[in-house]
Length: 136
Image (cartoon, rainbow, N blue to C red):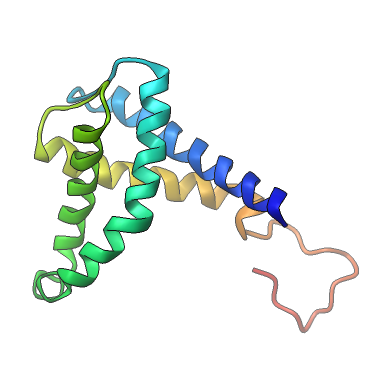
């Protein structure tokens, strides 16, 4: 059980690191001074997204509702800006870079996790499986 949790943690950290790295290649306003700053930034962004982002989404729910969900994208950009302020070696040029990079990172992370069969996508059904059971 603990080994699976550690494996999932490292996998998600790697996906976040890869997404941030690719975003830094695509968006000229994102720069990392070293690989260590990239890895620490991915770790910090995962923590911020798990702890602070849900709290902000709850607090800003009326505004998100009025803007038909658009403000949730602003919250995502603010999370990246927060991590850039906290981590030395992670440079971000401004809000709009963070805004579009947050969309890109979310989409790329989703696609990578969707492709991985261990994350819930069943590519093949086992031969001895019950046809009445749905495997997700």
